[in-house]
Image (cartoon, rainbow, N blue to C red):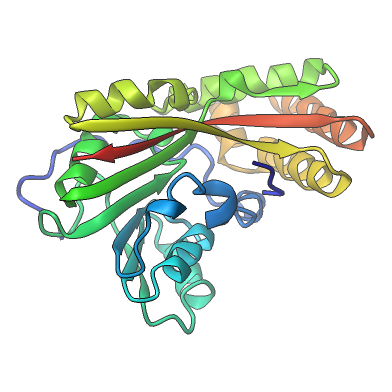
Length: 279
């Protein structure tokens, strides 16, 4: 696959953690290329037109709106902990769609009754959580017994690129350390089956997918957004405050991203793990 890319009393209590990326404009711009087709293709064939879907950690809703288009006789609810991105989603992705709504919410304490949804979906969410198993248990709680919980997460250690770049290698190390410094797991893809088993799912269907950034337009977009994210987003703030890098290190990494994106033969691959889980 190629891309240019109110709480229940039975809900678990878990630390929320901190979203390492934050919501800088460069982060939102990078996420805007995500669609149901390039980020949830493993799920789409299993969606019924009348399905009720919960999209957890929906961000600005670019995937959520695609899910809503696939269930014209159903309903999609997108939730995110960040009120500012939910406001954005309501004003853009949610405009004019009667089967779609957005709410703020907490993955550890979902404000829905047991077995409320046919499908519960989360894209690039579990990697940022301090307790992904607790989150999966809560997603399982609100999913119908014959429904699906669908999760997809990247694996930063498995990301690879050409040509070789010491700056991108440093980026990979710094980002993984930053993510772990706030309780996340940047290599989440490889952990997904184990987390799902620990969460008590009866059936787990694993698969994998990838993003490929190789066209001039894709390279420029991917390289420039990461050059900005590593110097201006919360990733930069956390790297410096944790002593993982200083500003000059981050500027060198940004320059390496721009140099990589200018190479005519450059390519970057992002591996994702995917699961379809039956409660």
